Length: 369
Image (cartoon, rainbow, N blue to C red; front, side, top):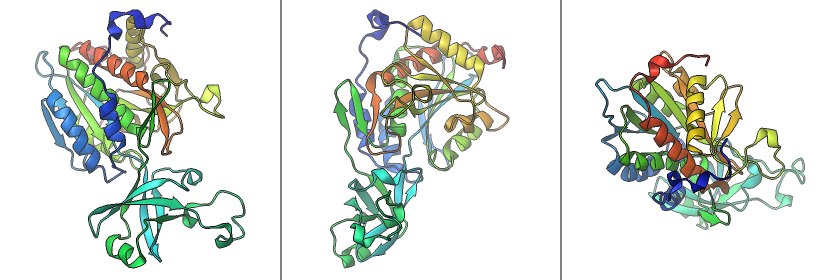
């Protein structure tokens, strides 16, 4: 791991600012299976820095940046899921919306949260707020404990007839909290899981405009990671890259979190080791980070990584895979937090790794290194 003098190197000169793009991502909806608004934003940003861009059959954004080495070019796939957790309308009663979760949500954080109801009948984006009935309106068994999703409601402020005319069962609901830059060069907002990693890949694509690379690069913003891993499964199967890297968030040190289960915020991205990750690629990234004095943190994941990396590893006849993590506090809440410099460091490391891939890299891969 690099030391405190790393930032004196020319390698760490300021890069193009990624924060405005990240903020736009955090202000855009796109829950699992409803990712189109996010996909459109990412496509606009990526189109000038790639050679081709298209959608997979289930909606993942697949961007190709061609390599310059001998044909046929080997290919690397970088998977960063663009979908987010959210909610869905289950019923309407007296103008209030009952809802369920899409992806994992802790109901403790929901009361008082602003949301957007994507009303299919009217085509409107209706602002609303999640409310909790008074204690006298709840079953006695609930008591003073956590109020479950089944008792929470969304109030749009509309009269019952107006709600019934605009909203339908099954309409998606997204968080509406706005991104905020906090002190300490960190940013807070909903869907940093995993729009932060989309930003990482964007930093890498920007850097690669100034570098030659022998390999083809498939930059993929995958869909449905929060519920099925479907985007990564299908894109990895269809594109058949020689190796893959999934970028996702990981748990950062925060209130009540133990040191051995979390990673410090702002100390660099994590390089993940475990059965879901190929040790040869892990070691290659580790050695490069140390050579370039890019701060990083080793992370142990002894089981399923819970990321797109699982899908890429087992797709087709198996793809050597690595996972890079961005430490994040308050995961799956509307106020997730990441350090901006961790995003920049991960993007730089990714660009340097790709630009240095030799055409015969795959031939050198061994399971034990």
